[in-house]
Each structure stands twice: as structure tokens, then as C-alpha cells.
Amino acid sequence: MIFEAVVAILVPILVLVIGLALLVFSSDRAVKHSISIASAMGASPLMIGLILVSIGTDLPEVSNSIIASTVGHGDINVGDSIGSILAQITLVLGLLPFLVGTFKVKRKEIWIIGACEVLALIIAVSMAEKGYITKMNALLLVASWLIFMLIVRNVTKKKATEKKRIALQTDRRYFYHFRNAALGFMGVAIGAYAVIQSVIVLSAVFHISEYIISFFVVAIGTSLPELVVDLTAVRRQQYELAIGDVIGSCIFDACISIGIGPLIFPIAVSGRLALITGSYAILVSVAVILTLTLREKVDKTSGALFIFLYSLSYLTLRA
Image (cartoon, rainbow, N blue to C red; front, side, top):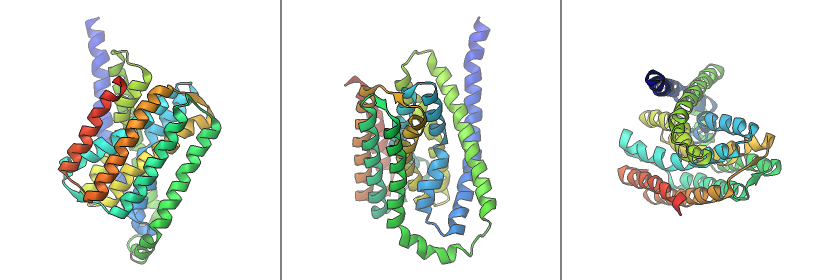
């Protein structure tokens, strides 16, 4: 019995370590080739981070959404997605200056993508708090993501066009870099899945509800790709790519991650929990966006504030 108990603990820990190693290895290649794609196509690093990189790092949430909705566990979908948004906008962004140092952000870009993120989250929470997400609700969420991306693209279009002439001369091997970026993101998703499953197994002994486990535990696991990828991006001085991924992932989670599963299988959700945690995520998002636009940088002071805001989330369910 003792041997079986030890094995039951050691196996998930081993899977956790392997998953993290795969995350680190794959993310470096994903970012490297994503940057090459941005240069080759003349797109701005912000848009690459906002669309391409955020989709790649959000594959774990998307797979969770589809699987959870298929088996009728809507709380796992919504809890993971809203929890990931909160973890990304606070923990991921807050840890970056402590791990790689201070970096600048541009006020106009933050205003635009930040406003889209807050609006996307408001729409998602307003649907989830009703206790049921229909196919029509899900379709609206998915369509909203496309609209938000078009808005950001049109506003930043001039900048991307200006870079195009130089960028096209740097690298024309689109398919080579796209293939390698895709393989990198696949590795990130597999590594994240291994991390999530190991964390769930280790947490199951505490008999915590699905929504709470998803919001606090699984969400941190599914946010690891963003943390590792953005660390690599900042180290490579690709600051726009990193900030685009952090906030872009939040928009993607609010629209696609929550909506893609119910678009196939409508789900029931713990409306009260979604309203409480979602409302807090909205307030925190507003605070983070205002801080970034006013200070125009991510340093240890703002990082400490963001991490503190995340820590306060543990009090939201006691309200």
C-alpha cells in the first residue's frame, strides 16, 4: 500500500518535470520561427504575438474547452478560461520583469488591445453568469474574436506596411518557418497537457470542485506556455510580440476558448462562480491596462502589483 501511494505521487511529479522541459524546449523554437514569419511577411511583431503566438499558446485551453464540453463538464471549460485570463494578465506579466528585467510598452497599442480584452471578457462573463452557454452565444463569442483582431489590425496596419519592404528582404522561407513554428507550438501544447494532467492528479486528493480546480490549478498549468514563450520573446528583445501574446491570449481565451466547445455542445455552467471570478478578472484587467498605459513599461514595481492582484483572487470566492 505504501509503495502504491508513493508511485501515485512520484509518477505525476515525473510527468510534470518532463512536461515543463518540453515546454521550455518547444517554446524557444516556436518564438524563433514566429519572429521569422513576422519578418518574412512584413507583419508587425504585435500582430504576430496577438494572433499567431496567442493561438499556439492557447491550444491547451482550446482542447480543454472541446473535451470538457463534449463530456458535459462546462465548469472545467469556463473555470480554466477565466482563470487563465487572470493568471496571464497578472502572474505571467508580473513575473516577466523579475525574471528578465524591465521592458517598454507602447501606450497606443496597450489602449487598443487592452480595450478589446476587457470588452471580450465582459461579453464572456455576461453569457456564462446565466448558467448556460448556447450555440448562439458561442457563435457570438467566436465571431467577436475575429472582429477584435480586425480592429487591431486596421489600427496598426500603417506600421506593418512601413516594415514590409525591409522585412521581405530578410527571409522568404515562409513554409520552413511556419512548419517549425507549428511543431514548436505542438510541443508546447503537449508539454502543457502533461503538466495539466499531473497537476490535476496531485490536486484530486483534496477533493476540490471542478470550477475551483480549473480556475486556480488548471489555469496556471495552461498559462505556462504563455510564461515560457514570453520569457523567450523578451530575452530576444521582442517586446511587442510578448505583450501581444499576453493580452492576445486573454482575448482568445474569452472568445475562442470559452466559445469553441459550446459551439459544438452547449454547456451548463456554475453561473455564480463565473460571475464572481469573471467580475474580478474584469476589474483586474482594467487596473493592469491603466497601469501599463500610464507607466509605459513593465518593471518590478508594476510586476509586484500584478502578482499581488492575482493573490487577492483567492479571496473572491469567500465573498
